[in-house]
Length: 183
Image (cartoon, rainbow, N blue to C red):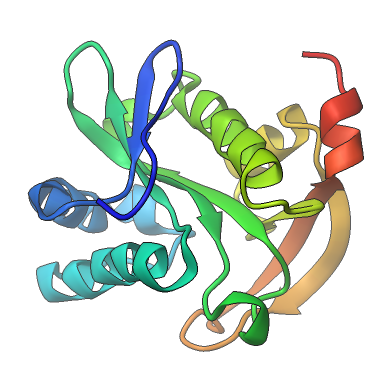
């Protein structure tokens, strides 16, 4: 693996491996899960997406983590630092994003994992600000961003291709705000 393994009370966060692919592809076929994170992905498109996350670790030294439950070892999604192309790319900032399988939603896993990933991004990567790119119709992700302490910073932004199909709002916060918030 090209990166660290982080643990929380209920989760293991680690870079993606080939063993994650069947679960990743299964998530890509979940219409409601994929609605706001690129749309349904056939198996070959899921492979390219997962390979992109793994490649980010190799090329940039960070990327989204695979999320596994500590109690069962079940792969339940991906989340973490994301900035395609690094600082030279067209992404609107240093993002911590999330996407979990339908069976893992609504249990606090995304907040737990995103909190650990934000800590890691600020402490290890030296980021000073973190964003979340969210479709304005994605009420659960907006609520999560707000629970994490992020606020609306920009509206109706078009992401670079191939993510340019619809506009997103940018939620974010500084490292200082993250450190000052009540936990």
